Image (cartoon, rainbow, N blue to C red; front, side):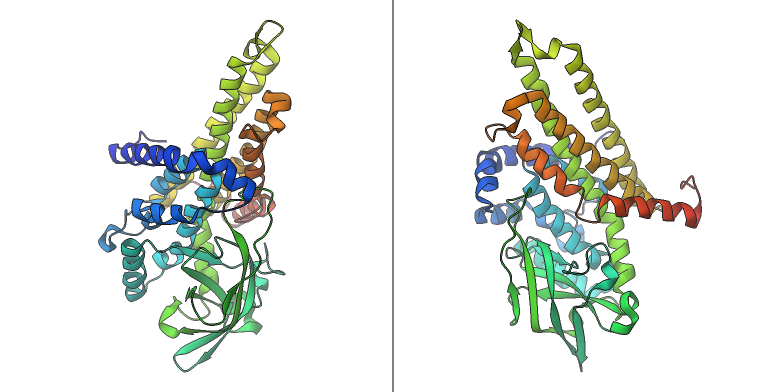
Amino acid sequence: MRELSNDQKMMLATVRKFMRKEVAPYSQEMDETQSFRKELKQKFGDLGLFSAIVPTEFGGLGYNLTSFCLLIEEISKVDASMGVVIQDNGTGLRPILLCDDARLKKEVFSMVATKGSSIGFAITEPHAGSDTASISTRAVRESNRYTLNGRKTFITNAGISDYYIVFALTDPPARHRGMSAFFVDACSPGLGIGKKENKLGLRASPTADVILEDVVVPEKYRIGGENSAFLLLMKTLDATRPTIGSQALGIAESALEYAIKYAGERHQFGRPIMEFQGLQFLIADMITEVEASRAILYRATELYDEGFENVTPYSAMSKLFCTDVAMRVTTDAVQVLGGYGCMKDHPVERMMRDAKVTQIYEGTNQIQRLVITRSVKRSGYPFQP
């Protein structure tokens, strides 16, 4: 990765200070009670985090993908649940950023930048997880509006988002070729939130169903053309999969740093356990994998920012590799702490639970492997121009 710019360094310093002061003291409590401190949403908005990828012309920070991933990485070092609060908002904004509707961009982006509104992303359904083409939510057009009916499941930030990007079928027989996307107000009549899921990890970020019962959406809030949302979804995932990689990288870095500090302070057999060769080998592998994750992640984001056409396999690799590494590194961090690693007095057990989730959402890592090999079949290897 290239050397950070002064603006990036200032951004990271500001976020680091904020997270340590405003979030870190409450992370354990939020995890144990599975609760999101509502006042943090206002503070995130005041700091401009919800408008991180909103172009500067609309009052946002105008971050490219590399800067956005640096932001999520830094947040996730302290609390990965808060990392996904910001990451998912970016996922919600991305389809609007990618579409050609100047009027919709101006309305949504200006609102996010001035009011600190947050956007959720609703694609997954009870019978449509990895197979997004199997969604059944319907959007029936009547004159200049659509009526939406369906149920979205495992929706990140459900209940705290002000708006949702909802994918629905406008031509059901065509399956994914009949999919459209809509910008939906969370206060719309007929939109409800199901029970909050009791999760393994990322517990401070609420996850629940979003239920749509005769929700009316004006035609002007359709994102892009009718029946064209599947391609928009695929382009969105090219940008959002690295953001999960950055979340995982932040988790792994924090677990590694905690394990190294503990190994230097914990004494057994009359000396710090860091002096034992077996532990040194373990930590050396952890360091190597974290550094490799950083390299592959920011290679993918730089290619994306440069407009590299065949970025899809790099996006998939960054999500796959970083999240697998986060799982291994956090598990090893627990091992370094021994019995203490299993206790909630130390954050590595939370980090291990958080890391597991990153291997699953935004496309399971098995799906990422399929994406990579399909790219080989389609364009050969190497992928670079």
